[in-house]
Amino acid sequence: GAGVSQSPSNKVTEKGKDVELRCDPISGHTALYWYRQSLGQGLEFLIYFQGNSAPDKSGLPSDRFSAERTGGSVSTLTIQRTQQEDSAVYLCASSLGGRVIETQYFGPGTRLLVL
Amino acid sequence: AQSVSQHNHHVILSEAASLELGCNYSYGGTVNLFWYVQYPGQHLQLLLKYFSGDPLVKGIKGFEAEFIKSKFSFNLRKPSVQWSDTAEYFCAVPAGGSQGNLIFGKGTKLSVKP
Image (cartoon, rainbow over all chains, first blue to last red; front, side, top):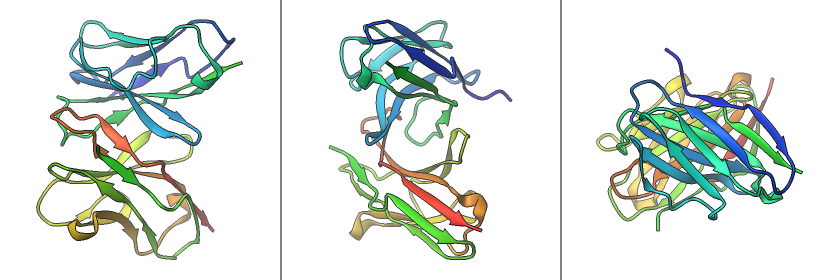
């Protein structure tokens, strides 16, 4: 079946602009995760959704970052007033119910470059 | 706080060599451990996971990992690597609580020379 998809695959933006990154999880998966992968930092957790609710936003690095999920499906990660340090690959993952034992299925990522 | 460390940043091996990648964790609760792999140009995917029972866990493509509680380790092994094993390998632990978000190690890049 279809896996997790993300769009765009690449995004180049100028410092100070806003960007929106989209994630389509596997159908039927209630849990959705956003991570960021950057050089030297590895993979960092950003935010977790269970259905449309975000019980854990602890990983969002600043108030410029926000995310929402609608219809228990598609999620959008928005970065306002982008900075060069926001350059990274943004990964989305989904799992069936969000339990610890479940496998997370990752998308291909969005590579963001802030000039 | 939970943490995981991978000591090898880049490992270079010839085909047929044996592989062991180190992973150490610091975790206060029930131990759940994961290895994920990212092949060049592909998505991050699960290689294997440990939750309970037999501390020797077998995963895909001939990989295995052994949970050693006394050493806080979960090293990844493969007796004979192939060129197609060239990838980046990540060890991970749950962040805590009942939800599934993970804390990842910084990754080990494996290059296998044909």
